[in-house]
Image (cartoon, rainbow, N blue to C red; front, side, top):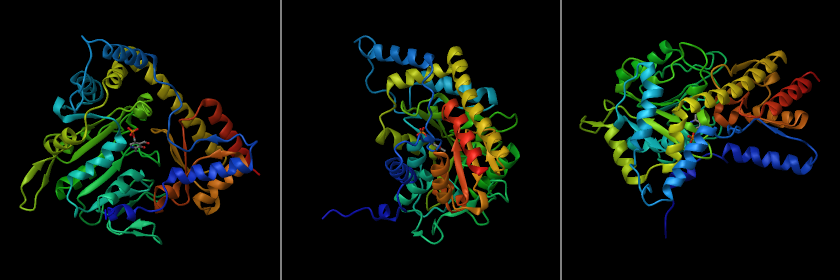
Length: 412
Ligand code: PLP
């Protein structure tokens, strides 16, 4: 008899987006004429840029000729892409990285979910609350979180760092020692960022406690304001205590194409029971070479075009387009009297539900009154209750229409 991995049985409820899909499908069946606008799931709507498409076509053509065909590539990614990543995303910000500190992959979701494998089962982990659910669920699967307390909406062994209206959606340092800390800035779902000084407090905490910060910078390309750090490695000392996850998904429309990368500096160590240090970089290399065979060549050939002159210009236009949507959402909701966060340096606007309404209740109300679908904050953690997320990744037309409808329904 094959036994189940019991940790999987500890996963709480149905996945957020399947519950949303269930409610939307039910609503559509009951109201077939309703023209629903989805500003819920964080997928993009703009196509890949022409420079990327051209480079991918070329990459595919190379695969069709014996002289240029490529089989298995390096598990860590092709040096032609890694060099451009360093040159464009890090060197101009004063961050020095070597080629073997960058690991190209097929997504930040898989990297953020897989990275926890390198840590002992007894490590204490901290997440912000609300949080991108992948950090929590991947640790549940690994047996690091204890069981789910339905009343609290939290796992017993996770340290939750509340992000609330009171602290302006900026988490406080843990009161007790933690070993692994997941931070995501610009944040999904709140759309908020940390300043360099604020991020430095986390780096200092991690250095003092020999903790590791798992920093998710999937949305760094959306930062508009000067002075907001794009990488945790802009902070002094971060190379000793942090790894960073990045993705082409939102930056360049690669959600369906799949390409991302993770930075693991050589100085970051984890310790065995005798207190001996082990390089996280070497462990991740070992993990990736064992379990991953690299992102596909045409995809990496496309990703490198993101850093060409045309590519940069085209991608900037797309990001400007989404950030104009963010402005429309932000200002529209403010005019309608809502309290909102984010949307300045991130493609997400986090709104407080009116009259302390529950976030699923508000989801149903907005779908019924305005035919607009967003994401209930409760799906991101107990402290997301009473909040609602709208994304700027829709089309301009739908974004304008959705905000007009929300304004109209809230003035009723
Ligand atoms: N990290 C965060 C915070 C995200 O919101 C997402 C996607 O929504 C990801 C990672 C996943 O990125 P990828 O498409 O590279 O797997």
